[in-house]
Amino acid sequence: MTRTAFFISDGTGITAESLGRSLLAQFENVEIRMVTKPYIDSVEKAMNLVEVINGTAVHDGEKPIIIDTIVDSAIRDVIRQAEGFKVDIFSTFLEPLEQELATRSSYSVGRTHAIGQDEVYMDRIHSVHFALDNDDGARTHQYDKADVILVGVSRCGKTPTSLYLALQFGVRAANYPLTEDDLDEDGVLKLPKALAPHRHKLFGLTIDPRRLAAIRHERRPNSRYSSMDQCMQEVGQAEGLYRQLHIPFIDTTRFSVEEISTRMIAEMGLTRRFSPR
Amino acid sequence: MTRTAFFISDGTGITAESLGRSLLAQFENVEIRMVTKPYIDSVEKAMNLVEVINGTAVHDGEKPIIIDTIVDSAIRDVIRQAEGFKVDIFSTFLEPLEQELATRSSYSVGRTHAIGQDEVYMDRIHSVHFALDNDDGARTHQYDKADVILVGVSRCGKTPTSLYLALQFGVRAANYPLTEDDLDEDGVLKLPKALAPHRHKLFGLTIDPRRLAAIRHERRPNSRYSSMDQCMQEVGQAEGLYRQLHIPFIDTTRFSVEEISTRMIAEMGLTRRFSPR
Image (cartoon, rainbow over all chains, first blue to last red; front, side):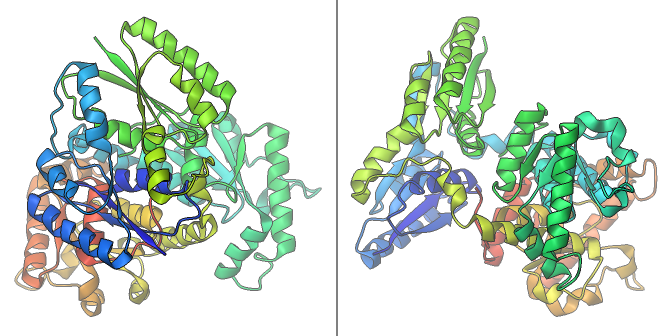
């Protein structure tokens, strides 16, 4: 028996969905179909959605779960009439907050996004282009402007992490690949010269060699580059370098890009130029 | 008088912060300093944080607002002892949900992230590299694999939007610049040939010419490229093309990357390969 959960928002739905998923993830035994309904920003849209929800209730034979972050009370009142189990964040918490802050809330739609939107936009553009211009060691002369320089072997996750840091937090992240070019005569990996003046900005990524081989295999099947031997050797050398030079590092196999980024920000004490929306 | 709000999480803090910001944005008259505390995943860390919160209460002369999404009840119990006004999402909603779903919740930390982490990782890698490989019209032979092809003038926001779609939703987004190369003999913008077979996948971006001029000015100051005349003309031609060919489009001046992406997904009926965390 499957139940349905609706994540409903007058905006992007990102907050409602991420909160809803966190709550429902606690119920692993229940099969729940999750549906996000963003931009429910008029009474009419809300009325149409109520019909959809009520239809789902009949179809499922169970009340749908309704998790919403709608601000406008007229729209919320419509949603409240739907057949469902309601997790109503705003009416639950806004009223107590009004009392605590001794002020009325503005109940205006999309208030979060209006604040400083222009600076956020420019910071994002800058940070994304910084990440792209300084991807994969393409340039090294802007490292004095970098907040962090990610290092790691090819395809360990440097690029997605740099871009996430840029888009979500405005952090200027360069990244530099560790390759065989930097092995010394004894086959030991040395810190590449371009990175030496910026050691305090370095953050290492590592990865399970099996996953690395799988990722590389899709790019260059059956090559030395994607062989288990090569992947194991490269990962081992990179981790050796991190330990030797006390470069903090994280395993991208075990953590999501969100976790890697937020842990890095915490550990390196980086300043976010703006906040996740 | 400034009050402090703490967004506390045993994970990345992204959900707690985005929910907290949405709630507090309703109180525009109150000056609130916002502090995110991620990875409060042990009783010891929670006890240290309680001291910080209590110190802040004394300093501010007002109770801090505490918004948390901590799952573990032992850690949550510690946080509950802090001097503050508590918005306790999980204890407020988990218990009623347990009753509704007639099952106990697992209260396990970071449950959301464990589910399908591996596929999400691979999908992200693919989507990000797809966006990079197909950025700015660099390649056109993979357009049959694209979910959407963003079009627009240089620096209107195509690249950040493509990357956000890739990272956050696993949507494969290519992007193609509209330039003077595609003007006909009468100076009218034509649909570039590479895009003609993919008209149903096109989504247009437009931008306020003043902001475009400002963005371009930082790249090439005092050039024809960054002049108001040029920007107005290019934007006008692009919008003309969208209207003539009924290409849906959105103004990046008015909306955040999150809003553009989620509106586009809704409007084009795109399938997300995974969900925001």
